[in-house]
Figure 1 (cartoon, rainbow, N blue to C red):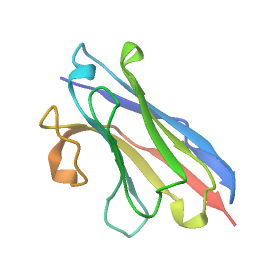
Figure 2 (figure 1 turned 45 degrees about the horizontal axis):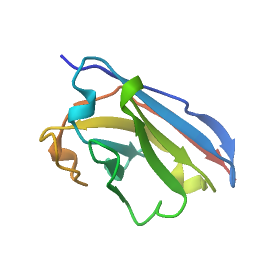
Figure 3 (figure 1 turned 90 degrees about the horizontal axis):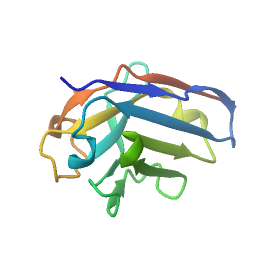
Figure 4 (figure 1 turned 90 degrees about the vertical axis):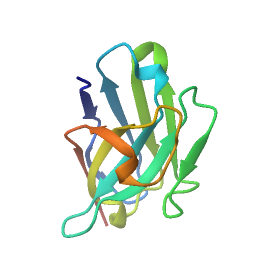
Length: 125
């Protein structure tokens, strides 16, 4: 069983930055692509970013491109989401997830099988 634990959320003013972390249990972290999703109150969960197993390939939602950066440290079983130039519309619960197919980086939530409990990010205007 894989456990994913996010941290790093909080309250920040518009224009500020936060770095989210997600630590995975188990020995297979480096074998799987990872993703970040978010869900605002009353809205569907949406894709934010994903990263390949070795970190060489990344994809982003258009809404965060140029402001957010996904990265990973396989030695620490951790994936990160650096969020800069935050906007009030970035307010949401942020979730990390592990790809169901090890090598696939994908924007669809259905392509991920393990999820963390989420961390709240609130951006004030």
